[in-house]
Length: 250
Image (cartoon, rainbow, N blue to C red; front, side, top):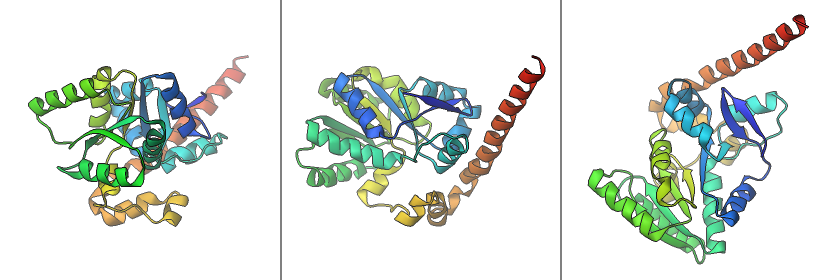
């Protein structure tokens, strides 16, 4: 699958990401799916451990509008693929293929609420287990034992960035053939605790505006967006000057 570097981080280019996931499932290939946005990309510029995880992931999806707009500015034809939508589509696919799904994340009871909603929504869905995202070392050991015993084929981990990426990296050996997806705060939305932006905002790459309106405390985190824009402009200028220098040296 073709990929394009955004601030040194790979983004895989496809017009059918769900199909890519299904291909991994059909082949039994263990897969870590990262849904990247501007904030994560900027975190990775200073958090080299996070950057390494992203670079080693089998599938990096353009979740954020900033990433998509940058790719389009470089002539790359790609649409935004919101991680929350792809993840739910994978769950639906799992119900059709008879795959076991495991949910990790959210406050106490949230993942179980999501499981109940999905079991009613997707006929035949097999939820192998649920855990909230606040566990101590002893509880984590029990969680690992359950994963190793039940061997779910799809595992959604909502522990926030970068904790979920590190947790997947450190524990995917427990279910080496599974599809692991970091889903951030999606469990809160799936459970009904929070709502997504209206469709017209999402379709115009303005979902971040709604998030800021609903959660003003995100203002500092949202500064990653202008920083991302400046960094990507610098990347483009650097490439252009590099090409110019190469021409001059011929």
